[in-house]
Length: 336
Image (cartoon, rainbow, N blue to C red; front, side, top):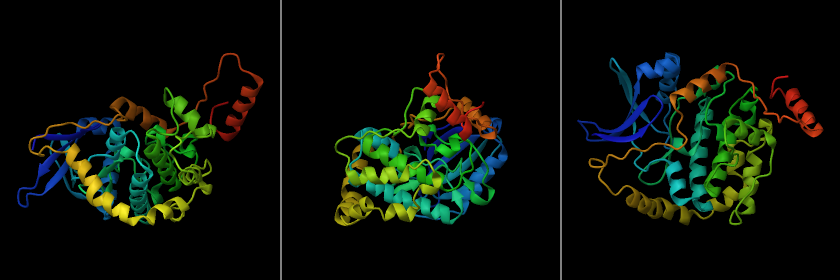
């Protein structure tokens, strides 16, 4: 239909229509030459295998897949609302009621994945799409893995990486729990909690345990939930049910009338405003601001095989900094 919905490291996503039914789908086309230059065929097989067995209202459905001489194609459910990332950027930050709506549905999707023994490993607003009614659809399982086949890896998006991944420690499904805390912070604040000029500085910020800063409009209960999730020790992080049973979540759940209105009116109006053009006429390309290019992807792949976090040291090291460096060495964060 000549409409590009998005572009990624290995290809593009276009809007297509099934001839027999007239139903719209999103077709993800990946160039074989690029795909197998930076990863193996096992990566692609794993992504397809994982998504084929998923069936949940808050997870993008894989309808079919095929290939030709140059490309591999995935036919996916079409989420016309675009990404949550784009919604946050447009509104600068979300109200706590909206944030609850999206976090609650994301939790349901992640809970289902964990019950299916799957870890997503790249939960972020770019990978959370919205349907016409503003409901969450988790997508992009390129970094996902099955718990039974879990290996140490350095993958995903830096801003959303858990401390144990940066420190190349053993990981489990608590990686996704950490991402939910970062997601909630970004929704109510408009930016991730851990930032820096480069990936190294972002990693330092994540490992530093620094106190997070908030706007005055953020409630104490919301801050409490974020603090409960963003625990450096993964064993101290709550389960999905622990998140859903937090007092902030429960207080928002009581205002169901607002959520019904959010689903049926508010979000629909925002969709109409943002996507007023017919899919047949619009040719807008949506490109994520945190998109990873091929070079970065290859570097990330190399790091995933053997990653050691290197703490940058100033030229004239003070005693306190020397002690901090020794602590990092003992934790295995940096080389000796």
